[in-house]
Image (cartoon, rainbow, N blue to C red; front, side, top):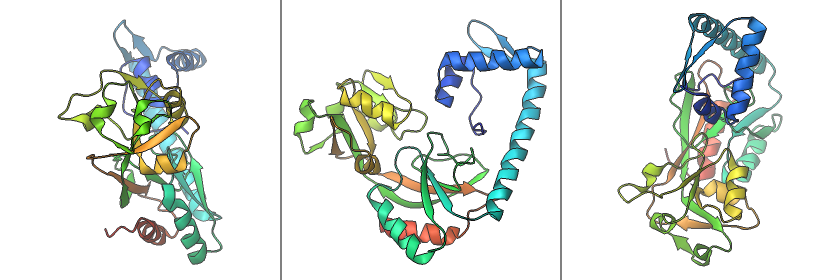
Length: 279
């Protein structure tokens, strides 16, 4: 199901970035929809794309349909509890994942705890892929509830043949002279992290952890990520090094307000225990 929490976008390029696809794919999808409905939905100019009056009415109806579909999916999930699915975009709980799985299996042996990858803003929650998700970015959407379960150190990722790989730890300033790979949609790094120091001059936009790692392994960029990524995503050609003097990354669990997953309190408690967090 499409991600309903995405903000409005003024251009096809911005929409493609939010959806993690290409501008051409967005353009083709809109053109196909307009052809099937027989009406113009968007007014296009050289600088911006806006809804027509008909498009505004159809968008409102589409959102109602998607909300109803999401509601039906949550009802079905609530009434058929065979497993609990935890979604994640980049890494599950890193080195704590196995600890949580063992603790959950001991506490709830009849309900498997399954981790699923979903490269979306809600890590599969709004799409119906997961019952609860691991997030490392704030989720400003009133449809969802969150609970902080711990925090993680930040790590740099550099190519193994980059001179920085010879160091045991790094500083943000060490990365500034290289292009930095950033996933603005699901990653945890923004240029604000470098303030008040000057940010890197070049940013390489990526869409997901695999593309991010491939770019770094080729020594075409460096990156900043969470400790969990470093633990869960080893890659030939990529070296992870701890970043000194950087703020930790908070980790949350998120779920639908109106459809909390079964045994939510147990899951929060065991996740915090895995991190050793006193929250």
